[in-house]
Amino acid sequence: MAGHSKFKNIMHRKGRADAARSKLFSKLSREITVAAKTGLPDPAMNPRLRLAVNNAKAESLPKDVIERAIKKSQMGDAGDYTEIRYEGMGPGGVGVIVEVLTDNKNRAASNVRSLFSKHGGALGATGSVTFNFDRLGQIEYPAAKASEDDMMEAAIEAGAQDVESDMGEDGGHTVYTAFEDLNEVSAALEAKFGEASSTKIVWKPKLLNEVTGDAVATLMKLLDGLDEDDDVQNVYSSADISEEDLAKLG
Image 1 (cartoon, rainbow, N blue to C red):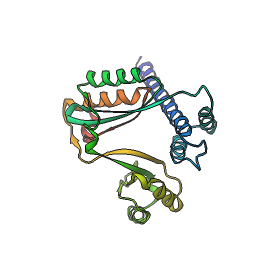
Image 2 (image 1 turned 90 degrees about the horizontal axis):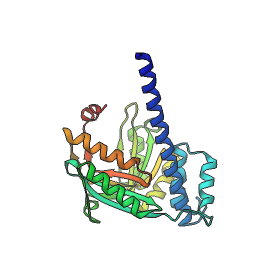
Image 3 (image 1 turned 30 degrees about the horizontal axis):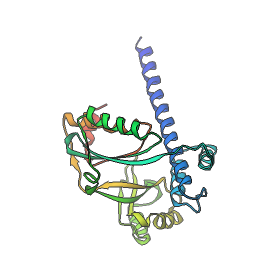
Image 4 (image 1 turned 90 degrees about the vertical axis):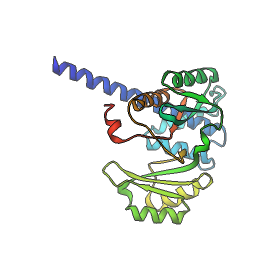
């Protein structure tokens, strides 16, 4: 029976991983369609579409799916998506920003509000959280692509604002740029180090809120719930949680 239970557990985890992958692919495809619809359907002529396609490739989204998502933007039956940003406070006084891309604003608003309420948070007015965040470009490379000094030197030369490097086994380099400089900096780094593993626009907190104890589990349920919602594209928070507290969650 022990072996059978273990097999079921492994299958359950694989099922969750497959479901998460499918959900991610759906969100990536949606962003490509919207990006292509709001500009030209050519990544070379549309910066937002180029970012969307590059990130989709980094997550191994199949080429035919990418092409289909672009073509969908030019079809009459393409989804009419609305971009919405929600701001709120989570457990431990953590600021949370939720970016939504939805074809049903009422559904999205109801789901986001419900998740905040269920997990000890509360939605706030526009600007109630973003004042503690900077809107920046973010470029990520695996640690093996360059030494910490080489990446720092190249990033500064390209016009980046900051670099955070973790040279551990699963670490990497994260380069931050001004919002308007992302394309220029990413092109300069790509010429030197090759294609980045991720290039995107993010909300980076200016100050972090340390979260400990029972609030950790509640906060993670909120963030995970938001991330799993079909309408939610991105979730950012100002949470500072230790590796030890995260490990306790299993």
